[in-house]
Image 1 (spheres, rainbow, N blue to C red):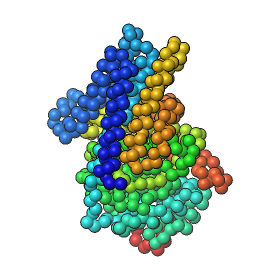
Image 2 (cartoon, helix red, strand yellow):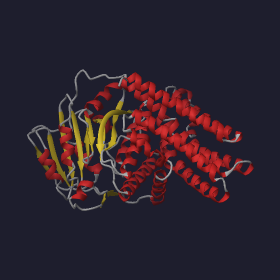
Image 3 (tube, rainbow, N blue to C red):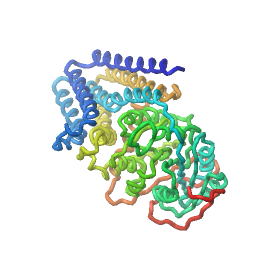
Image 4 (spheres, one colour):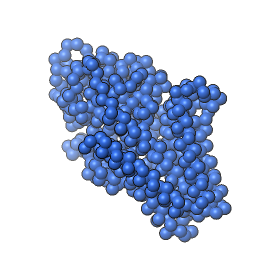
Length: 515
């Protein structure tokens, strides 16, 4: 299909989405609440657009306004809840309040992002520069107990169609299964396998960096496989932009077919990759995923590599690179990863993610008050803060108001409003799926993004927040793997991150020079 046809269809979807939303507002909301919601939406658009506009004009921003983003992030939901609560006391029904809060969630979290993702898709498709000379690349694969996976990962890298010189370095982080042997068996003359004592993923990656001599380093998780064009796409994106420190890959769930994995597949499309595309426009992608990311080696050295301070070293490293003044962009380079296929494993994964994200935000809290960090200060970090704290709390408020509605009447209107939300979410999800060239059948799961799956995510986030303790030792909960479970491998293992290094074993299949 030609790009022009795709663009026309996606633009039509955006216009349809806007039309449905405006019509729904006009039909369902009391005039006073309609005015409030539109005012809040207009304020959000003005703030977001103004922050982007002022990014290139830092001299226009007085130092005394450094506090503004964090004040807006904290104060905005408080003010909205207060105003709506006061209005409810005077003239509104609980269902109208539920509608207003839900609409604010949808608007703030998606409506400012999906159109930007569409624009990024259009612009990215029109920019296809290739390097005059493809630089050599080293791919790092940290692995801990990844038997039945690491071999496929290494072979997918070796099968890459990257035109330049390619080296692969697998760092076995003290595995107690057959990871080292499997990686060594998959090694060719471009591959080296190193075994070291268990020190955590960050330590394995930092050890790998000591072997690297190429200017570009790519990290790939051992349980993932890459598309043959992924490395070329990543390197090409270094040519598209200036002052680039890192490039984020495009993650897709490979093990679909159950409700829990399909929901994650939709989440990666709508809630992760769409946001990554939107922030790519400003060079402020906030997470370079561990499953696939490319870095300039000198930038990694400038920020002192991977840190042990959090359990989400990819998020921590990304923020450090942005704070150092480098831009980070998104790529079409695709990686396929296995998602947790049970609710128990998903809970363990997301609790680690959320806990690590909270640790990272606390570690880099100076971003909230220092305007020198540009768009990271004005837009990206406030968005992260809203998604991690304010929006889950609003979700709790919405559930409480729904419960009140069931006892005070108005269930008919509640069902009507729920249907309206579902229509909005389906349209948003359909557009995101089209942008990602994904399976449209995923859109059938869009209602769960509002009812069920969202509440699960909010509960895990609030649990992670309550469990956060200063000085608490980081613990990595390794989920069970489908292939390992099928072959009676050990189940979930808790690995406490330490600083130990242990002895090293090195397998170099035919390469005499260092990576």
